[in-house]
Image (cartoon, rainbow, N blue to C red; front, side):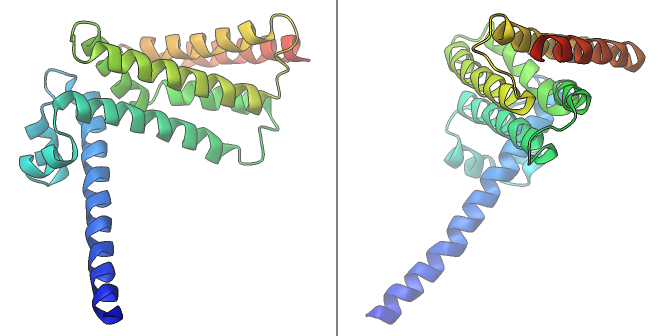
Length: 202
């Protein structure tokens, strides 16, 4: 009996691994499609084809298009947090480096994909509430992580608003980057915000 149970468990493990791998491929394909094609060009069929799986397999993991792309943006948010953590596993020793890293995250393909979903959510009734709730959660986590990495003391007046202003600025640069790659201007803005943070967080 124990041998049979062991065999069943061994059979389940590879299936679970394959299922996780399929889900991962679908999320990565959804992010890439959103970044490249926008919402209207990113159907479940297009994502499934890009991921190399059948439409049926895609719908097994994500029954609706909204399920797929909401999960994709959640995946984007997790990847952004992981990327920031990976850059500074012991905390940020250099504030200028941290400011540049946060701005890079907001001007990269992960943020571009999220932007396309925001636009779609603004006029898709089924998508709007889900993306609004998700982005509120992501915003809180990003703020918390940034405060931690900056070593900011939010009990001091104005510090919370300064950190949020920095994140809003980084998001604005991400929006501007959709149209033009104005790297020189961005570097000057990053340098100025580093000085602002140095002054306000001392």
